[in-house]
Length: 505
Image (cartoon, rainbow, N blue to C red):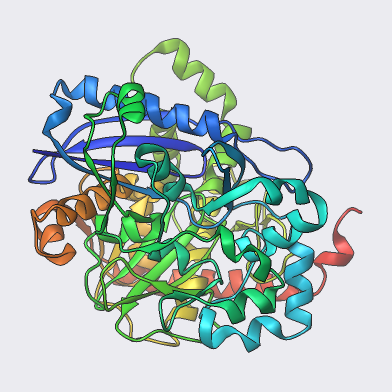
């Protein structure tokens, strides 16, 4: 039997088939077109999103050359927050992504009024512009007709599950990141809705479901489109940070998981929640009885992708012409290998998309000399991303002891040199799981548990998650990286009060 994991991230949809041992059988990806109706708005057309899922699912089945009836269960993962509204007929009305900032003014006002702090015992998190509490307020004031037409509000993976099954649920790991759920009781909370001023939209909130709960079966219409078998069970699924957590085997509090993607997410789990304004978010984890503590921001590999697209364009075009099988990341690794942390003194603040210390913060390349070359700049970018992760981890370490190991996922995990940077900066062993589709793998783990192939996610992870590499920290690098990280924090401290004055208005 096989398990299908579907992962809807920031700009890509992936469908991956795994066998009973967790071996990846096939994976197919489809691009999702992002829409920018106005500055600060990030949307996706719901029909186009569903079509991307349809193509990815059908292609994964065809590539695997299996009978779709052999798929025992399906589960979806996806980016958290944003907001996906459908009407009475199940047709999508709007899809708002997690990077949308249109509702920032509401969050700023709630912060000034002390509402965010006052509600934290229930929400266990800060609030931000792309959460549905703020988005509902914005739509009420700017596009009320959309809310009038809406029947259900989903997170992205709940929307895809709804399209597969026709049944409306919101799964708990996603719901616990919305600031609409009481994370102490795991129930929707009318007092929270009233405090945010969105109590009239209680009708949009679907029934709640567990990660490994069967939440419907593939309908004849969805089967015809996707190539799936009618009646295939679909599990609740999970927030993608939980999916990657399972995909790297984060099943107890001893380790700490780093995800280097569009966002740099740094997380661990524990039986008791951390409720503090000094931590970004505490949510329910996909393993019952555990909470997930998260510190993160859009300060990770998205910064590298911008740098490569901007300054390596000619190299990418040349590699394409040569058709040598070499990628731009091979070029990057070669340039990094020609540099040393002791002599490359430039610093990079990876705030091209967001600055967790200041909403006005921007990306900075500091300390250039004429003798430095592109490799030194690329080292500064990669080190800066590591330091941004470490900045968040220091905040987590206020609430726990130093982990015995780092479980690394995402783009940085693919580079041996970059992985070693993480190990040397943190002075902690870094383990990288085999395989690249960890979000889909986490979803497949939930699917396997949902149909009884394993008693729980912990036992499923022992079979599905495999490791073949570990980067041990180099103690001789500890001092140089400690000094460079101190310079990184000092630069941030110096610029922090001045950004609003320095920005071009």
